[in-house]
Image (cartoon, rainbow, N blue to C red; front, side, top):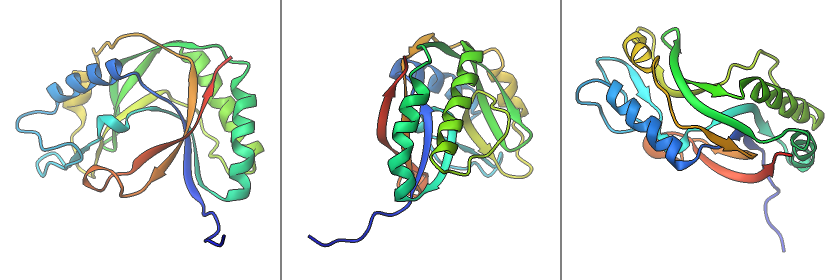
Length: 199
């Protein structure tokens, strides 16, 4: 049978959140959004803040970018090999802050150093599969909103600073595909490509 050849896919590696963890943070975020927040994915004219969809929340370990088919075939085995030496992690979302006016984030508590090591290992695996991986220090966080120039993220960042979410055990990583424009309000939709256990 004929057909078009496989295409590049926008891939990234992440740790997924349990539903209870996602819901707990979503309730906290809702309380700091201010009066009359718009729907998820909307941008408030007053604040120029775009809130991310809780359904898309995850802890990104490495962004792979557009991955060609020949590299896709190498990536999963490389990630399996990278994940094998790492034990499951006890994690919690805790605290919050901002990167200037650009990003509002929730922090990560628990096995942070092990999470950083896991991110380094998955980044090395992606590089070994032939991908051009960005080399910069990994800062564990979860993006809850993005701001346009002039957005004031200081109030919600201050409100999230004392956030403390429930602990969970992360026993695997996931390879996800980001399909641009396929999610709510034109956001990206994330599709699971492969689930890889730790240990």
